[in-house]
Image (cartoon, rainbow, N blue to C red; front, side, top):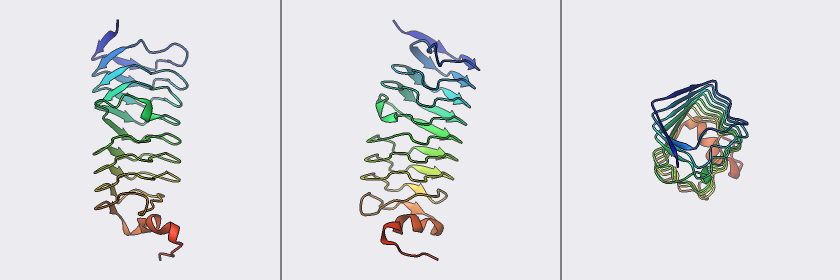
Amino acid sequence: MRDFFADKTFVKKDYRNQRLPKGDYENCVFKDCLFQEGFLDNQHFVECQFLHCDLTNTNIAHTQFNEVLFEGCKLVGIRFETCDPLLSMFQFKGCNLSLSSFYEMELSNAVFYDCKFHNVDWSLTNLTQAEFSNCDLKNAIFEGSILEGADFTSAFNYTIDPAKNKIKKSKYSKEGLKGLLEKYEIVVM
């Protein structure tokens, strides 16, 4: 039996040792909550917001995130590929997602604003038409990724090998060309 929670706000709750009750959460807000090293597995979140929460190394296996916003959150070391792919739709604003993984995920049209993606694994991920607005992609791994139509014009610190990814009609700034040519050891001035 799953609990149902709608239109509830959870503020400054600590779920590191006592887990969030298993259930379906609809239009709920989690603000300044602590989940790090905890368990958010087998949950359903629909149209929820996580604001300034710490989810570092949280287990999200088999969890559904449908139209969920993460804003100002720390999501370091999260394995997003373990969540339920059904209806998975995320939006990230001002988040730190370093050391996380989106391996083999379907993230067409995903939008990322002002996020830090250091050492993130995007291998075999479909990022068609995705937008990386002002995102730091230092040491992010793009291999076998579909980046067609993706917008990297304001992203920075990325290295993308055009021979190992599908990049047709993706967008880059002139300053970002270095990230596409790095393997050729070409000097761009």
